[in-house]
Image (cartoon, rainbow, N blue to C red):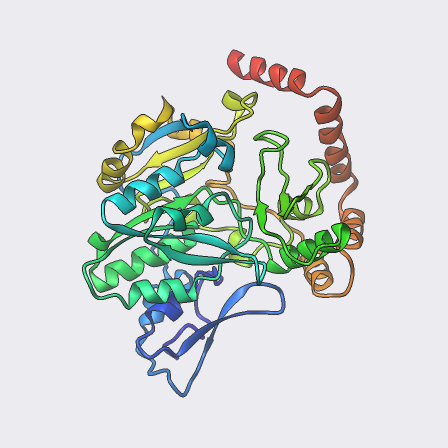
Length: 403
């Protein structure tokens, strides 16, 4: 069998969707499975078993390994000088400036937009600054890529594209570009990725929020809002004059997200997360003691190619910049780390997310399945945040500076 139904792959499907985009016969469709992950479905009547989908697929790449880089990386912290851009971004507002300069240089930009009709994230192609506004902010689940990726891959013109995506999506684009010998057409920018949860988590969560505040549709959702400042994970939901902000303590979405038991199977030991050989620039939040007291947001930027360096240098004056080592950048990231999870808990929670149970019921049930040590750790963390706040952070910083 010479297509992605071949079970001999050493890795799991990442849900990137590139197999559908590159198929010459449109024989692959991306669908959402019962567990809330995008999966390819092959129409055997159309498939000619050419094997192109396997050539760009992460599952079958036995030579791909962690911690490889193709360029001596430039590692920076970056904070946008424009306070409005900084406020509207999830971290230091770097991606929006890169997107804008890419448009000026003749690129079209592929980014992720939230679809308020379907309550899902979708990869889109932007050619104007106005269209870029929908790409602002992180989205904490994987986007539906099939239509946008297919449009890019079927474009045989000299049009250039700047692709913003997860490391697994950028991996697939890089492989496709190599296969088609179109590397010069693409600027590849990915993120320091923690992993992608089941989309059923978001579907259940957003349904719960709508019922709670008695609204059927939102005009604006801010993932990782800075309402409680940068380090606090919360959502802002807006509809007309109504606004609701989720709690920064015990939010069910983030609790299950960071609990790691409902991620895509490919995320637990992801090679793409821990390698930058395929990307030009990697972006993320600069987590770590250096910026623990910063309340506005700071980005981590790793420039990994001459092309990435050239593009970033065109916008560098828009940021407050500091240089760091690669080790300092990745210290508080998921780079190079395997995520542990409980297989039985994962099965139970994925089943519950596909049931009629409410989000709160699922959260309570999930907590009871956790070891006592995990429950105590969560309670202690919330206690320190509530009662010690910045004092606790200053103690941590003092400890790090002594080391």
